[in-house]
Length: 186
Image: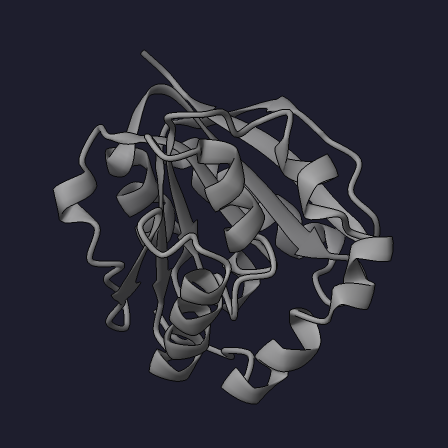
């Protein structure tokens, strides 16, 4: 899965609380994440979105955070335990090209792919794995940073998602991002 992966130490900058001023996780996630859901977050970094998703899914839900960098997962685990959310957050170390989510087949309600897909060498492989994990009508929020990802690059990733059976249903407005909400068919 690793291609041009953000270095693990950048995770501290991405988890900076000041980022909430322009990208508030609750504002972004509340329309999509509800109590009791199973949520998948590939590339969670140190958990900027993860902890708020864990709060939104409540004690009956769970967030599965998958990353290729053990340092990111170690910090995320510590942060979730400190926040009292450790029982709701499961971390998994991915391998290059394999998210390791076969056990989630047809169990995931929502996937957050935030500033991630452009780092992958093969978006089609990624979306195939995501599509298999999603329940029917499950959704994926894909957001890529403007300026870092070209319009053509975003269109290429969207085409890969469509090829794998994920259809665009909405284009949410997220600061400094090209964004699409995708849905798995029946």
